[in-house]
Length: 247
Image (cartoon, rainbow, N blue to C red; front, side, top):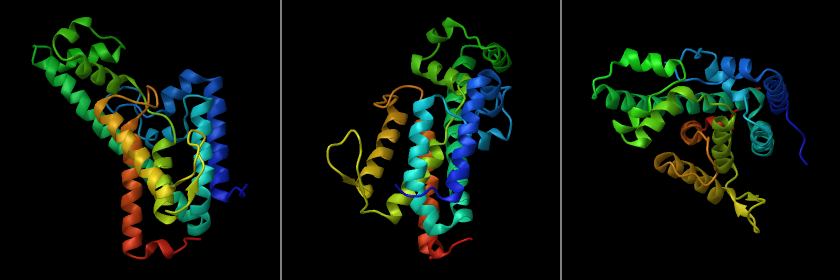
C-alpha cells in the first residue's frame, strides 16, 4: 500500500467531512452544495466547485476516493501538490461545464417542444420551479425529450467523478503500461486499454441513455472531465510542461 500524498490526504478529509454533514443535514447540504441547473432557484456559483465534495451514498464516495488515492497518488508524486490540485480542479470544472452544457441542450429541447404547443416559457418555468409537471406534456413531445427536460432542471449533480476521470486520463497517458487488477476482471489489464474503454462506455451511455452502470449517473460529466484532462495532458506534453513540478 502506497503512502497517502499531501494533497490527496486533504481532499479525502474534506470529502469525508462533507459526506458526514450530508448524512446529518441532507436537505440543506444537497440544496446548497450540489450543482443545480443555472435556471433552477437552488443554483449558486460556488456549486461549480462544491459539488466535487458531495456524494450520493457510501459506495459512491468509496469508489471515488479509492480511485483518487490509487490513480492520483502517482501523479501527485510526479507533479507535486500544487500542479496536481490545479489539474484536479480544472478537470472537475471542465466536467461541470460539459454537464451543464448538455443539460442546457436538453432543457431548450423540451422548452421548445412545449412552446410549439402554445405554452409560455414563464408558465413552464413556474410549474417546474415548484417541482411539478403536467402529464399532458408527454402528449406534446417524445417521452425522452420530456424526461431529459425535467431531469436537467430538477436533478443536481454531485460527486468527484468528473475530476477523477481527468485523473484517470492523466494516469493512462503517464503510465500507459501499468497493469490494473480489477474486481470484475479475472486478469490484469493495462491502463492504456482499460481507461479508453471506460470513457467510451460513458459516452455510449450518455448518448443512448442506456447505462450498464445503473441509473442516476452523470455520464457527460465523466466524459467532460476526461476531455479536459486529455486536453491539459496533451498541452503539457506538447510543451514539455509535464516535466515541471510546481512545488
